[in-house]
Length: 197
Image (tube, rainbow, N blue to C red; front, side):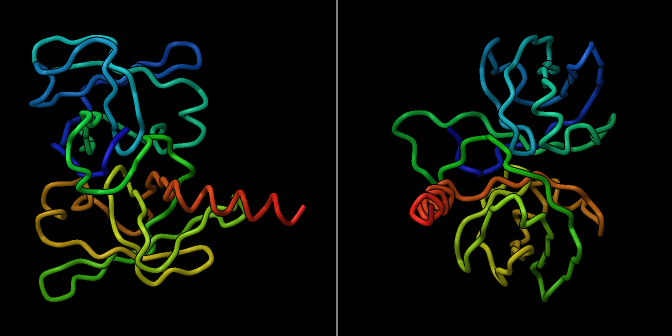
């Protein structure tokens, strides 16, 4: 379980393919605090630490993860948003985030607006995920509030702190991102579907 409050950034150091899996080595200031088998969200993807060496650690992504996320587009030196799983009893500063990416989206517009930034994303609405105005959304693991909710797109506004301390500062039009929709909204959508049948 995560909160969507990004703890730090990591840098992709190496990517190795082994059969259908990807082994990704990340350089990060939190590497020496991690443990083998620990869950860490990487751009919103919950991955398990399998090896640690000084300031580097390695995680493995299986084919299901590769298919549903933007992890296949990662390359050496990319900045990755990192968050360790929350501790029981911690404050929930963001919202309930599972680290299970629902689908990817694409950045279609970036506007700087007097000290803040407005990012707009488009996604495939045929996968039945929804946003609501002022609801929660996780973009590359970052808990944000939806504005301008539409059937297949939405926007989020970032304060300077979030912009500087996440990989949003590297986004351009066309950047592919991981989206995790609000878990409560997913349950409501599913109940509604079952009631229609």
